[in-house]
Image 1 (cartoon, rainbow, N blue to C red):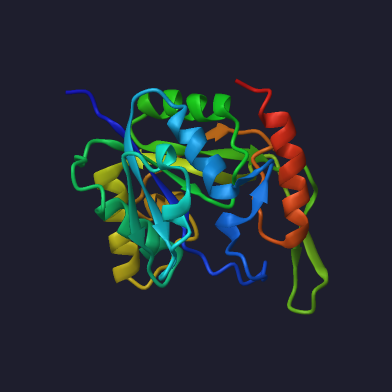
Image 2 (image 1 turned 120 degrees about the vertical axis):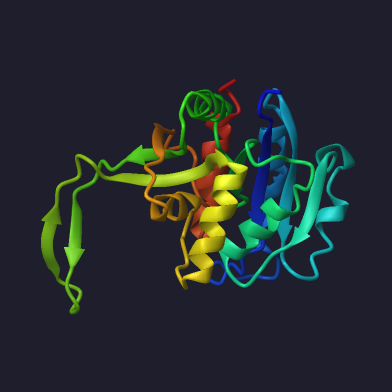
Length: 233
């Protein structure tokens, strides 16, 4: 049987840098919440078996989203860190097998272009390890010292900014995250946990339109990015 594809959307973060009364996944651009945009993007992928959305404790807003977007989606409570939350999401996919693929995405990235999604899936299914969307660094990069002064300029030719989704085999990612947490290592993304196993995830170039909403000003950038993304099919 061919490996199936699942997804996990991390939507349980505390959004301490954003603030405000509305949890970040439920902020709106283009008439829909950030989480709705993410769910629609994954629903557009052919062959998706189902998914999980990892929510903050006490979240009651998810069940008010359109029913069509919640079809074949498990809602699960997050943990005390991003890695623990993602692991909770993976463990909730009880009908998935270890050899199935899983795409892990941040609800704070509502503008992932659908061509990028398809390119990531296509590339990873041909790869033994899996990989992630990422963008080559175009700016000059400085390393700071303890006084906030520029210590040195880093060569940028091999530097990339990680994005999501990130796509790996379900069994391998559960193992990687579980071992990392047991060892006291908090990976900031899934590829960091995979790397700690000694593996090298594939970098699949993604669009700069795949912006992350972290601070209030980012919401305007996301709205502008969405205007461009909606024309990409």
